[in-house]
View 1 (cartoon, rainbow, N blue to C red):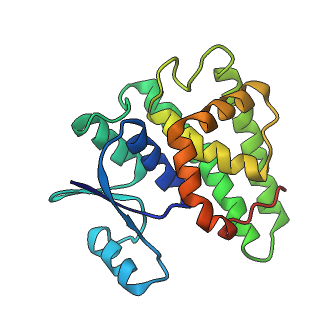
View 2 (cartoon, helix red, strand yellow):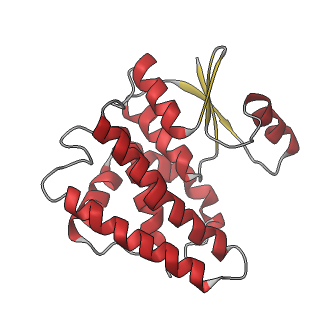
Length: 203
């Protein structure tokens, strides 16, 4: 049985959960509170950097969301994860949407540095424009098939939009399609008890 070590609010964990739910892949969930020393130790025993998500498949330990999705595609019938465009879009959403979104969240948890927020905001606006162009004539990030790239897009665009609203019309419509998928509805419901931890102030 697959085991997933994760937290329901973490955006990179959503990426893996969406892939699992899309294909109804059975797994044992282990919710990790990094503030709990026992739970943190369990995670460190698998991945010394104490970062989630981490997937365990018997004796095989797979850290990091993209690697997990590639592993699921290869060994457990997960969503498509192979091909240049899928990989490129996956990395795009992680690096140019998820990471600037997380920089804003980090700033909102401490005395705010307006310059950092403004730079991250501009990165997001630029990313939204690129996504808008890609989605002008396709349903999903890489065409008409839901792939690993869409698993990356869903949490990154959802959280980013909470901070810096998406105004580009094709990108907004794409986010709406992502939000309507049962997998995304499920991860949002599971995150609801923890939502008060997210500093969702639009900037």
